Length: 154
Image 1: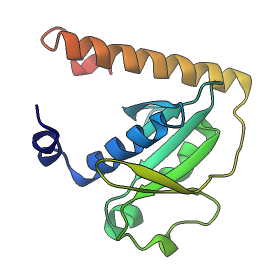
Image 2: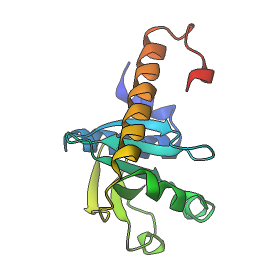
Image 3: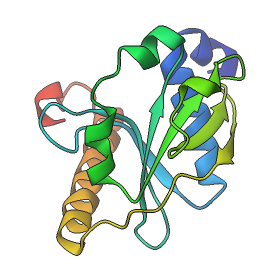
């Protein structure tokens, strides 16, 4: 399926997530979208580095989208680094200076500001690696056999 057909069916935040995931792959990170680290939280992109580093990226497609997000502080305890991903028209002065910044579109992204590192405790890292692996495995199985895997397993 041509790339432009795929992108036309994605919402703005999904396009940002796609560009972020592509760019992070270039940094040797693999990623999943819409992972739930804890009840009531769902991150847009969780990425895992070659040494088990866990990054969370929240994709914001507009000022209103950012200003209505009251949960993002809760994501900080589930990652080593936290980033916002926005497009080039987003007013980046709204974003907290002590978080990472990625400028993205549906095709690529660039890390503008590295989020500060706050290393996860070993037990929390193990939980996140397991959640990441199960989430990725269920998504892969659903892609292979969509009639078998239901949403209840996410």
